[in-house]
Image (tube, rainbow, N blue to C red; front, top):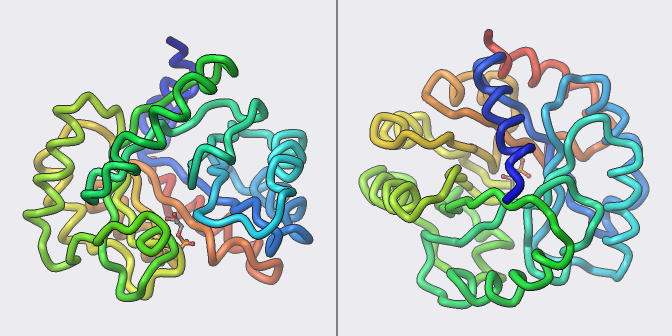
Length: 249
Ligand code: 1GP
C-alpha cells in the first residue's frame, strides 16, 4: 500500500505545527476561476489541494481535475463526494466513511463500489473518518448523504465517534461543519476531541478568517480547510494570511 502523501502530511504537521488545505469543488460553478485559485495556492504555501464536491452540475469535473493537477505545485488529494468523481489525476484520496451518519450506503456502500476502481487506478488511499457536525444550516452533504449531523453542543458525541474512527484504524479524522456553514466546528469540540484521540484532526466548514483558523489550530487541529472563502477571485490574496495563521512553527 502506498503511503507517500500520508507521510508528507505527517511531516507538514511536524515541521509547520499544522497544515493548510484549500478545497476546490470541480463543479461547473467554479469553472472560470479554478486556474486563479490554483495559482494563488501555489504562491501561498498551501500544503495540499483537496478536490471534490457533493454535487456536480455538469460532466466537466474530470477535465477540471486534470487542469488542477497540471498547474498545482502541491499534492492534489481527492475528497470524494461520490465514486463517479474518481479518476487517475489525483496524488492520493481520502478513503472515507461518514461515521457520524447511519446511512449504510455512505458507511460502506460507496466504498465497496469504489474499491476495485481504486485498485485498478493504483491511487494512494488515506483512511479517514468523516464526522459531520451541525454548522447552523442544512449542508449539501447532509442532504445528499441523508445523514444527520452531530449537534455542535455535544462534544461528547463527537469524541465518541472520533474515538471509534481511531479504533477502526482510520489514519485521520475530519471534523466537518459543512461547506458554507454559519458556525465552524467549535474550539471546545476540537479541544475535547484532541484530548482523547491520537490521530490527526482536519477541521473545515465555515472557516472565514485567519483568526478562526488560528484558534482551531491552537485547540488541536492538525489541518485547516477553507473552500467557500478562497474560491472567490476577490479573496484569493487571503490564502497567504491563512497560511501564516496556520503555520505556527
Ligand atoms: C467543506 O470543510 C470544507 O467540505 C470547506 O468548507 O466551504 O465552508 O470553507 P467551506
